[in-house]
Length: 212
Image 1 (cartoon, helix red, strand yellow):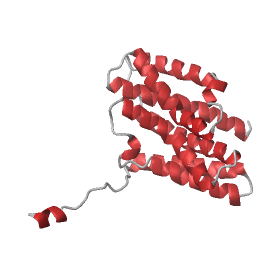
Image 2 (cartoon, one colour; image 1 turned 180 degrees about the horizontal axis):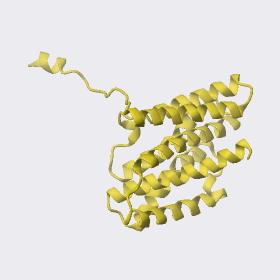
Image 3 (cartoon, rainbow, N blue to C red; image 1 turned 90 degrees about the vertical axis):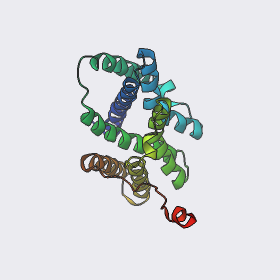
């Protein structure tokens, strides 16, 4: 299997996992099957859709409908499965970390190949990785994951940054992509396993104390 084929299959896996996270959010809000599929859909393809619209290229799932079929199939299967069995949430989180890593790399690669500057490449990678989750959380009435203290968007940003540096200084893009995927995946899994998080913005009460 070539590197590009591996990335493609990991992309499909990430799409399925992101769809499942959307479905889990739908189950918490007790949505019906149609609502669950909609939430799964926007979670799985939201980031890539916005990326392609901004880059002014055809939206990827309009050119490869396999993404739509896989999302709908996964959503229906998990909708039924979750009614009778416990969903392995820990496994879903680990696979979600892999999806985040792959989506970040794919999004950054696309912008780089189109000749955009390094900051845009990094932003595009992060966008591809996290925007679907933002849309999911907004529609589900929750604070988006990237605005909480969990290490999520930070891992994507660091991975996209390493990818850009690798494109410039490493001997091959494949090596740069592998390093970026490992970094994002590793940081996210470490944060899950060790419960690491970023500092929370909490203004001190000194000004209030002085005003009393």
